[in-house]
Length: 85
Image (cartoon, rainbow, N blue to C red; front, side, top):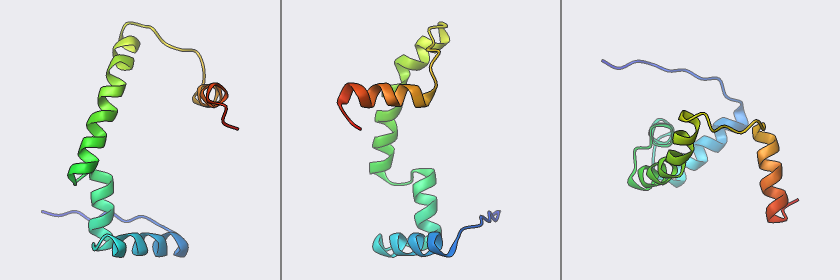
């Protein structure tokens, strides 16, 4: 049994999705589902790499080893270390 999901997008967002889907040779539905549900092998590999990256951090958090900085502060710190403005 299928279910319907509806989202509101601007005309510009719809046009962007349509162009990206067309460029990929997919319908908008297939394109969005593929991007959100990670249906292709490349995305699956990217997700596995991301989960491997997160694994030690999740373990640290489970042990109570947490950082008391906001995401913004962490990003700013990383940018500063990399010399990015």
